[in-house]
Length: 59
Image (cartoon, rainbow, N blue to C red; front, side):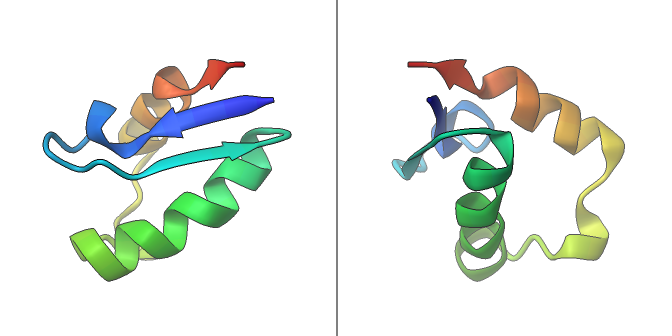
């Protein structure tokens, strides 16, 4: 299982996601990033993906 806390990348955000793997986390976090933070798919840079992956923890 993996867990991701959005606040680890965007201070002040309290959204957290848990899923079996990275793909499951991304499927939950991507719509949140677009709806709440205005980050669309074309704005997801390799650097942002690296930060996203680094913020995930195994639970």
